[in-house]
Length: 77
Image (cartoon, rainbow, N blue to C red):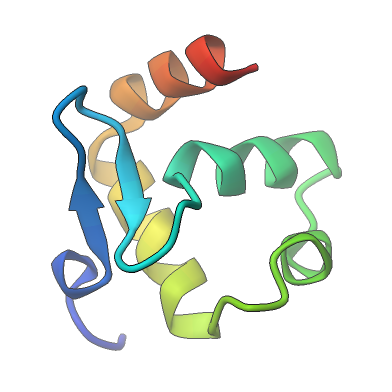
């Protein structure tokens, strides 16, 4: 396992988690993953600017904050 996800994730005032230094929410990554049949390649195609470590951090955050991320998905999509 790489670095702790906290190094890659920042949470905005509304509780939405973003990849640090981007406007890409963890919810965006999970949404693409869920709607592509669980494809990591789809995430890489959708967000080519993200490193594998950033994507891994998003999934680690999701594992620990599943309900919040699904709320963010329902608010964003």
